[in-house]
Image (cartoon, rainbow, N blue to C red; front, side):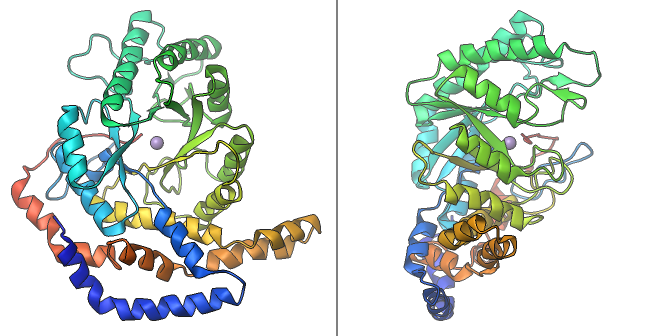
Length: 424
Ligand SMILES: [Mn+2]
C-alpha cells in the first residue's frame, strides 16, 4: 500500500510552491469577487466513482496487452481503487460489475473498509454469456424473443440488486447489448415492448430507497440498431417505469458531434437525469481517459450541472467508465478523476449573473467569452490544495510512480491471460 508517510514525504518539498501558487490564484480570483476558499471547499466535496473493471487493462476487438500486476479478482481491484482514492481523495466509491465481482459480502465490506471505500451503483451484465447459464444472449437479453431468456436476464438483474443491498449500494445501472445487425432482423416496436416489460419486472424488485439507471448507447455490439439507442428512448423508459427510474449518460455513447450538454439540460428539465459514465472519445465509444480529447465538452457538461445544481431532487451518480489499453489503469483513473474534478471547479467559476445578462441582451460574443474565461483558468492549485489538505498527494502520478506499487503487485499477483472484456 501507499502509506500516509510516503504521501507526506513526497508532498513536503512541493508544499511551499503550492502555497505560493494558491495565494497567487486566490489574489487573481479575488479581483473578480471570487473567494478561492469556496472553490477549495467545493473541490474537497467532489466525488466520482471508479469502475472496478477499469483497474484491469482493457482491449479492443483485436487484442489485449495486459501490463504487470493486473488485478486477479475483486479484492485486488479494491486494493487498486484504494490507491486511486488515497492519492486523489476524489474517488471514495467503487462501482461493481456482476458477475465479474461476485464475492462474499462480508469480505467485500471488510476490504472496502480497509481502504475507506464504499460501493456505488451495481452494474448487471447480460451482454455476454456466462459458462453456467441456460440461455444465450446472442440474440438479446431483456428484449429477447424467448420468454425464458428474458426471465433469466431479469433474474440476473434482481440478483444484482440483492448483492447490492448487502454492501450498501443504492442503484442498479442497466445497459443491454440488445439490438440488431440487419434491417428487418427484429421488429423494433415489439422488441422495445419486451424490453420495457422486462424492465418493469426489475423495477418491481427495487427497494424503496434505490434507483435504476437506464444507459443508452447508439451502436455496438449491435451495429444496425440498438434497443436503447439514445436519450429519447432512455427517457421514454424512465418515464414509463416510474419515479425511481432515471437516465444515465455515458459520454461516449453518442454519434460524433452530438451536443451532449444539451441532452444533459433536457434530462434535468425532465427530472430524469440520474448520472454519468465519464470518459472521452474521438470517433465512437472509444472509452478514452476523461478530458484527454475534448476537455471543453467536459467543461460544458459540467457547466450545465453546476448551473442546475440547486434543482430540487437533482442527485447525480458520477462514475468513470473507461477502458485503458496502453496505460497503467491506476494512472489513467487518477488522471481522469482529477480532470473531471477540474471541469467541475472550472464550471464553478462561471460568472452566472454576467452570463445571464449577456444572454438577455443577445450579446453572443460576451456570453461565449464568459464561459471561456472560466475554462481558461488554471485551477490546478485548488485541486492540489484540496488533495494535500485531505491527505492526498499534491502530485498523484509522481507519488504513485515513486512508491513502486505496480512493481510490488507484479511480484505477488499472477499473470492474467485472456481477453477479459469490460467495456460498457
Ligand atoms: Mn457506460
